Image (cartoon, rainbow over all chains, first blue to last red; front, side, top):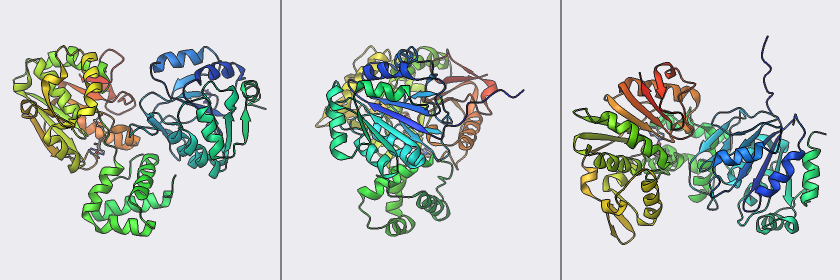
Length: 194
Length: 271
Ligand SMILES: C[S@@+](CC[C@H](N)C(=O)[O-])C[C@H]1O[C@@H](n2cnc3c(N)ncnc32)[C@H](O)[C@@H]1O
């Protein structure tokens, strides 16, 4: 008999965050109920957490499989992909990943802008971007691209963000579809499938 | 912001192949599109038609285009533990050879090649080594020829160097002048520099070690396979193939007669 293959994701959720975003992730991921019909990508800036530790930390909080995004991987639903440190993650038209070591963007590699923008082109209105706490303006240009292509924009409420700078920049620059505090974010993750 | 459309990328790829002989057909389209869009914006072209005309007709601009569209970012001792493995497990196995031939394919401005020269020097093997440094872009190779790198990077490189097991001081290998680190001439003497296009050029020698890092991530599977065959033809039995930290030969046609060292670093030995 054919082994069951994980279906391709036609919807994508990308979560971008910087300083202060890890705690939010640890809070919201346990709310997810398997199987999630979307693919989820997490792009976080991090200085000293190595990739294995981050993957382990997040895996411990959810039954959805968590793995590092690898070049040429097909994007599948019910998987949480972590962008590896020191690479940008791009998305090809055939919904596979490409890694890229080009210049840092907003002092960051991976850059949230790069992945949001690239995904916006491919996933259009099937894309949801969430921007969390952080101390730089990465993500804002990417949210604009997502918006232009019909995607949905969610920004963590600056009052509930540990470092409100990044969400504030986003809210100033674009009209977010939702601005959610921590409880609302949890609720969003709990209802991701319905 | 992406202004260039998928169809525009296809047009440019065709022009490059038909007019100039550069084949980007099997490159990552997402990266090409992003780089082309950035270049289009930076160089302030009023329209795509003018941009395309310039690429088709102006040979100087063509060089700039190819350089900008390929990604040339590099570092000394990037991924220090990779270099530690070279230092401890690979280089000692090459020591008995009368001449050690190493090929750095897609070496960009040469930081990687100078790092290797330092490892060989510290193993007392540089005098009998030859480091072939190749890239598709003549301009990055020109930079390497000078052996001069930005001084501002040296703090990072020095940390990398020590993590890779280096016990001297990186500054022993260069003199600082204004904002530049000028590397000792003796390191450059064994480096042979030449353009080489992995897509269209063939094997040119036999090596004991081939290093090709962060180049294959820009190629699709077919092109990766083609390049792996080229490397296989260019590598002696018991020679080593070293790739970037996110690259693998695992799914390729040559994988059967290669064995990975340990399991963390992306280094394989031909058996
Ligand atoms: C990201 S750099 C990698 C530099 C270095 N190996 C490192 O890992 O730091 C990629 C290099 O591959 C070169 N390249 C791209 N396509 C190539 C081709 N077809 N043949 C040879 N070199 C190529 C680019 O010009 C660039 O210098």
